[in-house]
Length: 541
Image (cartoon, rainbow, N blue to C red; front, top):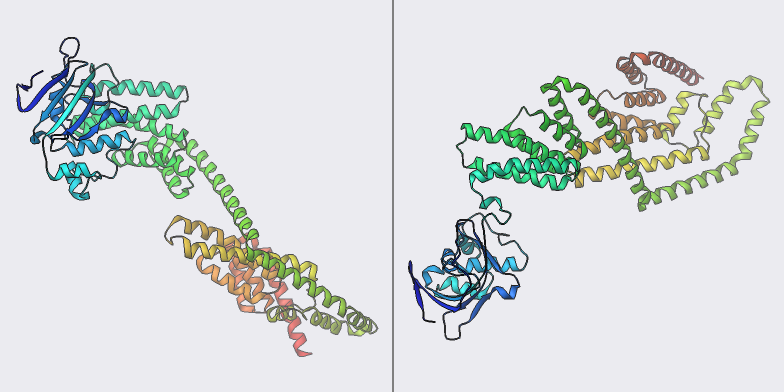
């Protein structure tokens, strides 16, 4: 057939290669057009640039929806179904073809055509990256030229014959679709198909936000559309809670509360999400906001807070157990355990070697009934033979009250001491090397450090390392003022070291912290007075 010019486009030539069937289709706005195309250079070889048949998938466009290659709409709307035609297009129509071609190639590869692009026009992205990624398309960008398109029209779909996406809908159609999506979402929730329901709610929210974006902020229509979003957002958050997508709930609830600060349900759902991801502080804050906004929910809030406290305690003990497991499997933990066992064996050998001498010494003392006081002092001196300076001082201060711990009694304490020190080192490493000092993890590790320090101090106290107990608890009380256990352990250590003033101050502080502890304080002070009198008597002798 001869070339023919399109009536309204003198820069386009059309040649029909194969006639179509049926009457000329009608192409209202939104019509879906399915076609195959082939792009050729207008040179002697007629070099093929693109061919949709190689992708084994035809191309689709929607009439009147601002496709980048506007000329293609004119070409396709001049064809019948089944028609194959060749179009020669001048360079004025093909300037954006490299961008369109790149997007179609990415779609054929299963990739997002917008992936990696910045928020700017298509040409702006080309200038930013200086290349489309395809040499033949880069050449077309540098030197725009006429192109030949061979098109085959496969199908013309009625605008209402397919599931229309939001960008294809007009405002009235979007507003009619929102209640339908809301109803479908509610039905899916009743069937416990939460993922599908969430997609329905999300689609409805997007439609409303698109319509709202075209209204004047502060206008009555803008405000009403914002109110219509609230139940849909809350339903979406509930579906995400059921699907355990807690951070998604926090994000959407926070966005909703940024616009509607008195939404009780949004605070409640965000509180449950915070509690699920162990954000205790944020969860309590949101539960308190629920209580302030609606006092009728007091019972529900108190129950949730109790459950949160129980879960946080359970998490604390689980983390503590995990730390112990890590320490047990670490090389340093095994080294401390082996060292403790070796020391225990050495002590047992010393006891066996010196057992006869000690028996003879005790037998000679029993012959003299008038030497009971001296016998107590000598027994005390034997008891502190293998202890450090702090232990000797404490034993001498206590006189004959304390007895020497046998090796089999001290071994568990030493092993526990090694474990606690290893745990402290591990917490130090996490806090000062891996964790932000202003973050929540720092505070969690600080909560773990407190019981570890108290347990370490308790082991040192049983091993008569009193000066270390004093130093450890003094350091602890700088961060945790008024900690009852720390004050009590330091008071016992001062008492063992015969630091009378410091011991009395700590015991009186215990009485102020807990008046119910007064009988124990009086008993400890009485014991301290007896120890000091015994010490003065020993010094005079």
